[in-house]
Image (cartoon, rainbow, N blue to C red; front, side, top):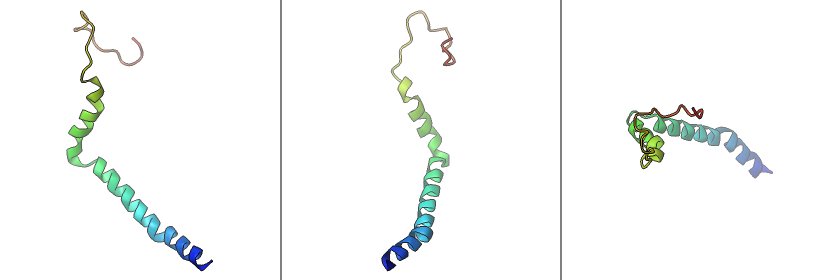
Amino acid sequence: METYTSLRAFADSWAMAGLFLFFLAVVLWVFRPGSKKVHDDSANMIFRNEDMPKGDEDMPRGDGNGR
């Protein structure tokens, strides 16, 4: 039972601190200053090869509500 108590104490203190630091590092990595271009490219890659129907070039795209 001593092993369980030791592992539980480790998980409650150092492992939790380590996981929090890992979470903080991931959040900082995502919101780093140079990542805007990468995220914009990833967000718009689905539209790269999209062709508009003939005659609809000057019509604005819908707002997502089907109008």
